[in-house]
Length: 485
Ligand code: FAD
Ligand code: NAD
Image (cartoon, rainbow, N blue to C red; front, side):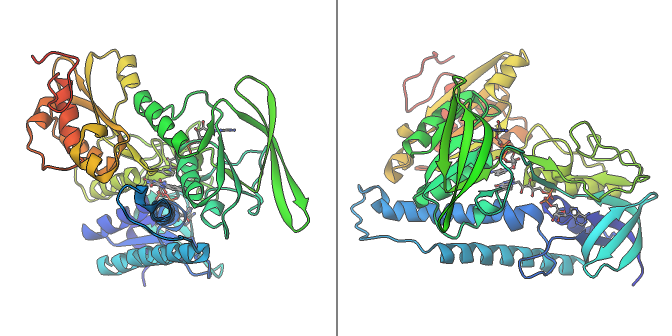
């Protein structure tokens, strides 16, 4: 087979594999290089998202949610008696692994169907669009391409005060694999991973303590929603301690068992200690470029170690593009996939652009948090006039019927044009509801447009309609503070 391609993609996470498929759909001869290996040592596609990220974490979130619902007899009020409920962790983990295998196999199937050449091994960008490919046996080959797309992703940030030993102190990948439920689970970082994986193990019986350095909870989210979510998490016994800086950790061997003593400075500046059976470090992720770029590749990094790209994901080297977690912007699977589509279409000569202002963001706790567009804090800081409509799920028939009344929908619109600027939700089906607003925003909708749309009854999405009506001061199913204009 010739070693010359139209497009070579390095990395088959959601940014890389989507770019490869789209390029091949557009008639470009495409190869995708991937170095990830399964537990059995086989090359697999899907990157962080499929192997140790979005998919396995959601598998565990769903299993643990079903367990906690059954254990609490679905809230009791439904009249369902369950008897004693137990969980077999090894079966739960096996189910997760099976899902990962199925999804990763799905990408390989899509590669075949679209005639993307899958190459298992590592890729290194050389000068002049050349790629050094090293297969799993160490055999090297130089490949040529008119265009190269770098999609090498990200890895967890390590902190010296809590070094990962893959046993007692683990990162998010280790926290997807605990063979039994840790009695005392410490988590450094109350961000997305801390909340999601803390929820998993908390539902299964761990006493979860999250040590968060910032004084503000979920500082990048809309603060009205973050405060509401914090109240809900506290009811779920997630012990979230803000303003806590971890200064050290010591693994202690106790007979056959091990534990870890964490030292931290609390919000009042006092030193405190806490002992855990397992400690998860999830303080963010960093772009991954190790052994990716030859010195003369011409690709520059920015001050944060991300590959420097412009709005079209073009790097500083002609014909070299970069997408996904390895470039600026939120580290989200769908953001990388859309960049992958944009780049593939650009290479094929189309004029595609990506709308970075409308990228939904979700935290998959129960209830979920979902957001799109700007927060109230950001809009205020931008000095734009705005109006807000908030509607609680407590006043939504479907939510009451389902006993899912925690949370609210918040819609923010421009005070003069009424154009929707952001939507922030904590509550049932939040990710699917926020997607409705993402579509509305793509079409430049006003809050009134959404309020005038007919919504099915009884649905959770009626909270979206009511919040949109509340922007104009005329929600139907609650008293309005503002008068109808
Ligand atoms: P990655 O998925 O990291 O893939 C990069 C790939 O490149 C890897 O397979 C790597 O092996 C390969 N690679 C790197 N260098 C080379 C090389 N030199 N040669 C060959 N191959 C190479 N995001 C969401 O949107 N929703 C979620 O629910 C969500 N949940 C998450 C849960 C967890 C626990 C974690 C850790 C992350 C989660 N994320 C989620 C984030 C999401 O996984 C990432 O944003 C996404 O995977 C980034 O995609 P990517 O293609 O840029 O990189
Ligand atoms: P994060 O940025 O969401 O949260 C990290 C938290 O750790 C922050 O609140 C930060 O203030 C805190 N922190 C940093 N250093 C600390 C320290 N020394 N001590 C205590 N706290 C500290 O990062 P994450 O949870 O590790 O997740 C990484 C990324 O993966 C996310 O930003 C997101 O892009 C992606 N992800 C997305 C999803 C999703 O979309 N549902 C799920 C998981 C991960």
